Length: 61
Image (tube, rainbow, N blue to C red):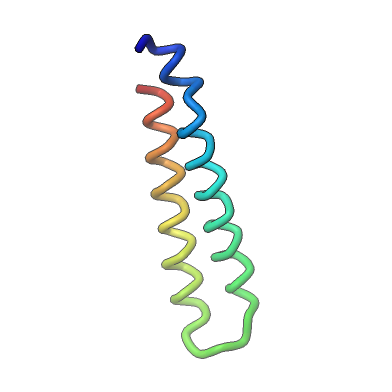
């Protein structure tokens, strides 16, 4: 598989959509009212960022 086919693989972009959804969940939970909402939202947001970075670096590879 050449680099263009790898960059255009559908799996990378599906993973990126999932990462964006997880990141948005982390942002929305920041405004929720429950104990430890700030810590939980930060952890979820960091997970979303890490997944997004993984997909971006897989595309660039």
